[in-house]
Image 1 (spheres, rainbow over the protein chains, first blue to last red):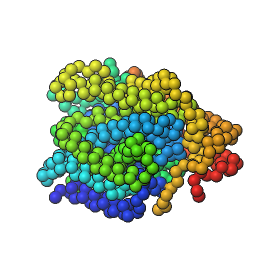
Image 2: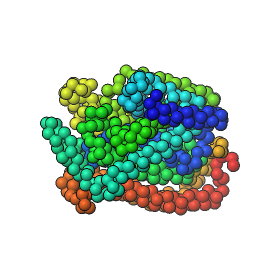
Image 3: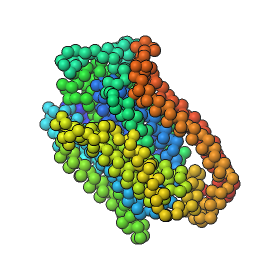
Image 4: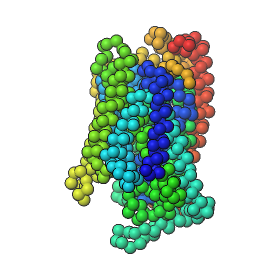
Length: 529
Length: 108
């Protein structure tokens, strides 16, 4: 058995113990959906960081920087600054006024059934796309790393899917949170170690390091060796649309993070808004440190391993593991690979629980069975069944797509939908007195359709080189639809509000404002640790 | 949950609550505008003025990288400033709740 497989089995064993203890800790709806609201501020901060630093950021960002230099680092910047939106605008009102999901805040002053149905649809869309991207990534990674052990792509996808269902179904939010914390600590440790080894390679001299980054040599398109300054912007995002692409990407990152369901549910796991605020700051400390270190991971891979070697040995996503192998040998390679599995597994579990929560709480209880007496046990049962179904569907789609599928656009899509559908509606519900039900439904619908539609007619899906799903010239020139779809989301919400004759419920708005800003009547913690 | 609608209205209409909202807005609105402007200055300058941004200012390191790096510190500093300001909002909210004698919502 290979060393990486052994380390991964070790991680799974630890998480199984966590799941076992979480399952014994209690049942109940608040326990299952929100870990009894008893998670401490720093713990939730680490868990938020864990939820956020997915395989896309660890493996993906190292690869993008290794291949495209500076332009890849633009992702790192956006991913941290996005948390200012979470901190200043969303986290505290959400914790104060909601119960389990984003839709709770919307349903306060709007007619709950249509709003919850739409919010649940957009939550499920975001989570499922994000999850499929992670699972295809996991499968491809595993089949590369363990190619000598007989573990195939299909085995890996089924393995990841089964484990995430086990965490969520048996351990609920508490287990998911602790799996996330363990993984985040491992990821930070691995990244720190790798960064120090990169610096050691350059004799701990930053100027020697950056000197090397400005002279990266690789084989150009015509077969000649080329030397490029990797700190120069524009290696990936070239004219005529490069600048717009960067701005559009920035918009999706800055506004999308605050609309990602699996990040938002985290703020319900803490006792109050003040703790939610502290957990965002903890998360920002970790996430910022991590993304600054992507400088060493990405540029390190570009200078020490080299683009040509990475391309010949598994492609962009293998940049970080190959860097580890070159600097620390087989043991470190195994360690970094195991961290990559752990990362994928934890993020997928986080996505599953947020999607199941939204389906059970918003759709099942409050849309389908809204007239019946509310039964929390049933809500938990529905969520568990949903986790099974979502897990199964994601596994099936990931296997159907196969490991060679280009899934990076699925993550871009998740951010675009979150930024174009979820965020506008949430902001308007909190800050615009006139906002009404029609506005929320229009905002969610237009935002969702605009981001989906623009991605389908954009260069991620359409192209004439035979590698794209639709063999034609792209109609929309940008890969990132945010620059158009976000304004459309806001416009939809505004237009829907103005065209509807529905009077806003001013008393309910007053109540929402008081709750959101003072924490009066907020959901209390149900169990202590 | 026991409060009646009129009680929520009463708090919403009170001078203290309005003062709380005002002092929050006084921090949050400029802070949000600032970070959005500061952040989008990066993709705009990198996208439209790549030659200028590629100018080396600190050994081999160019303006583009330093500006990107400064975003991290901007985010951290702004977060720390908000944390301090939020302490004041908490105190105001607490005083308001105590003064209007409305309790803390659910059972203690």
